[in-house]
Image (cartoon, rainbow, N blue to C red):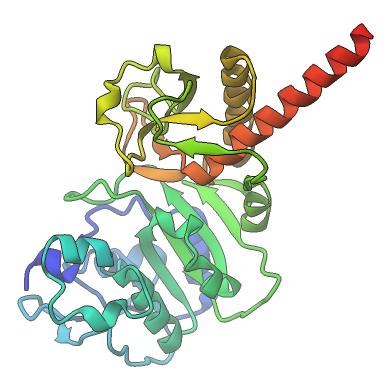
Length: 335
């Protein structure tokens, strides 16, 4: 089995150990650092930085120095230990695309990524867990199944890996299973807000208007991803201003699209301006956290983001609603 099959990405830097994470480890009172997916052991090698002397590592890769264990099947409990790990990442889709799915089908029966199964196994084994996992976790449906045990989520803008640009976050789980959990969200060492607040700011479509994506006869275009250049961020625009060959837009296109808004007679420039204003407000209120992370940072070091079409639809519908209301008020004022 190679790194792709094992979903291995070894952590080479201690950029993940932010003050709030170190405090969480210390406050747990645990005296053993335990990594059931130990890999090269980098998270355990820096144990003294979080004031723990005793370490235990397990791994499925027999070429490594650790005791053998397939921790996706079962993780042994260790008294007074806190799991600190970077579990394997591999989506069901990627496993099939890379043709390495054979023998792994059972891992994807309930979960779309190996890290999700790993989290379940870790929470079953230990009361305290610190896991470096894909940042997509924050906006995934899987989060809802474990959110009651999350003390904090820390988004890492710096890349702690040498062999991937996969955007990641550090999630601290404790032994308090609380239905109304106050989960703290950080970017680096900066506190942003609670997870509940950020979720409350999510934009939901009204489903009141006929809006079709990837329709080349539409008038509204969207660059749905931040480009590396800081002057080319997510943006709504008229089709005429889209520097892109419309022949490349397919039914499955997700990064650049043309949108058809049916049965609504609104000036396209007014719609563009209103959509961009709503997008700007949304990004500021949520510090971009509600937008999907995109691989690799922009040239200014900020996380690149992608606008999902559900949120894009909500923005367009809200913009249409506002413009229709404003137009009706203007007509009333004339009369």
